[in-house]
Length: 183
Image (cartoon, rainbow, N blue to C red):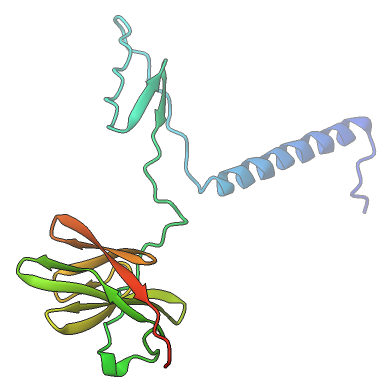
């Protein structure tokens, strides 16, 4: 039994059928890749004058350049941490691991809201610059950004000074160093 086409007409018929099957396979593959969604049919022509659709109102944050609407970027900077760590609790003077500086230092004093605030010293603790501050006789150790004595914030340190804030006001306290010599 011979299955192969022998006449030119049969060969042409096999080629046409192979082309139709190939086209169907391609269409099915495209349909499957598009998620199986069918494009909506165009609306049928209606009688009467044609009315252009009204443009949608632009959302805030979009700018118009001619007829082209470009959305404005309102995303998040990927290099800024989403969560910032809370400041470490301020250890009491008995818990500190590093001794105060070797020099005798006296700092300036400020009276804020009836509380006496004095900068006692500046030091490094595990690579973090910290200030030792006394508020009404109680000593605190704070890094920039820390809140101490429930209401004061150490804003920044620029040796030999430290910048503080209280409510909406800011102030600076500085150290004056005196070197002690052995006799």
